[in-house]
Length: 248
Image (cartoon, rainbow, N blue to C red; front, side, top):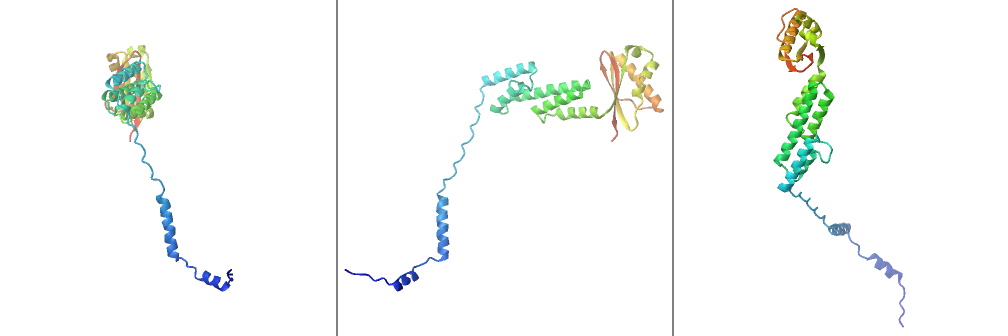
């Protein structure tokens, strides 16, 4: 039996000569481990491409176009969201971009709204006129009729506006009596440019009103006036509207 004697000096010697890695090698080893861990991460998978809408057949397009015409006849131009002419034309264009009849349909919707805006402006229903233009903007914001119509509404809303209604007896009376009735609108404010709208039951009556207005404006001004700018419209009740704008 062999007994091994514990020698502390030998243990210290072994501890003293245990090999140690330099710091640079430790850093390299750590970097290698980190790189391996990163490389092990799965690569991101490419997202699948969105499926392109299947174009409508000619038969489907015609069905939607016919439904849009029915909606227009029912005055469902932009509302409700489902079933309006606007929504039906847009459904065609979503699957058949550039489809000519659908694009023309959108233009037709805008034109109808602009017509209604101008008709409301003629009646001086400014809120309704603005609403019609706003609806047209929802359909085709860059349509060339929108900005000129908006400008007309703005000018009328900002104008110094005065209206004189003329009873039939006044219109048919002597021009002196007619001119007296026109005094309020014939007295033109200084530093403003004015134009007139004349409504009468006939062209003959409208011209009589224009002459009386022009004569009275000259009398009140005290000097010969330039030719008054006036637009004549025919309707059953006579009136004169004066619109004046600040000179800029």
